Picture 1: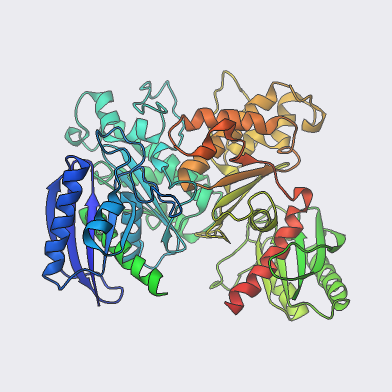
Picture 2: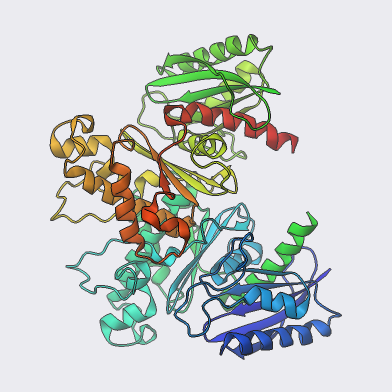
Length: 305
Length: 305
């Protein structure tokens, strides 16, 4: 039995929780507290205080997992390990998220990107249970892609940034040049919520399910799915988020992904309209906090292994 | 000390070798024999016979590694594990490469794709030594991409097939529609040797280093490098092969990759013209057989771990 604290650190709010975990089962009840994301000092101090309080009721925490917005420094050999690196968010560039919480609480703190955390959570308790390699994609105000390989969140040079995959845009069909400040018409630049709004002049949430823009979005996400399959051969791709959860969108993504895969990869999961390959999340909006819990828990497993 | 047999099984020839390996060092001398690839029965029987002969001189083999053309069934839970799945190569669809050699020799046989093997070999003894996550790309009559994550060749739904990544083609600049029978203008369809020859009417080997087609090829491979970076964040990308080794090509790939990454990923390796990120192989033409040896060796490590 372990007592795990969790922080889902987002750009506008942090969700802090704690749970008693036994074995690999999903915790039955998680106490959570929401904290607005303001300055790093204030936000992290309030997160630490809340963790101390929630943990205190359980007799103290054994570890904390943090699933954070990024980009993050995830190389444990670097002094800035666990800090946010570059970000346009005022005050947060260089914020030492992990060190702040570890120093304040005196327990091990595991950290990863929000999407890597969510991928881990979906793999433990959600739509990718029991798989070795899978991908979690969130489509909302941005597009984030978390990758689990061999049961672990993937790091490397940095961490995956699949929201910025280059996709093919046909200017005759989609004259919108994209809104990514770095790439223009990369995946996020074309398929996230603000890019949809920029094309049609209304928030994506207000559009009918059969608005033609959804087929464009489905095509770009289908290209992403095909390229992720070609690049790393995940067993499943979970797609969620405020835009990704739109009714009917996943069917369009599946249709276009199948078209772009072009019958080249021979596997039963890629038949029947890809319904077993591209799937909605199993944890819904709880994937973030579940991911943070899973990160904290996985850290203790690694240490005791 | 272990005695390892190795088979690099290609579409036109198999290279068979054996070496005594100590620790993780690269074997100093490898005896090799070339065998033409004919029918599976004949080819595999001759591979087994040669392995028995080479191994006999060492006192018998402890394991064999096979780096094979594919696609391969690499799910150890499937009865067709270690067989070639679909291939246009006459007679080879379903060929039980691993089982044939294991039954003939009575020793453990590890198998992976030729490019996953080469990636492993480059990671042990070549241009990606000491790295955790890296990619090996061979550009020749086709394009193959091997992926190592956490020090192991990546499998998942199947195995990576990065040669078929979708890339962006500007029809005004490159009207060639591509030669991939599945995708037309995917990476391989646009940037492999035959695609180059189809555009200019002469083999790629005969073209001057400053022929304009090289800049197109560099762009497509640069898109591949950027998308691999976004998708899985490898620490290094090794590019070789008959076309990939062309003088000056890597500089073009680096230039276009940097352009497509667009400054979004912040890491020292991505400065200085990407010379430390996109590199030529360290093992040259020996990567295939070295990869097969590494596969055999890694198998014994896993078993004894």
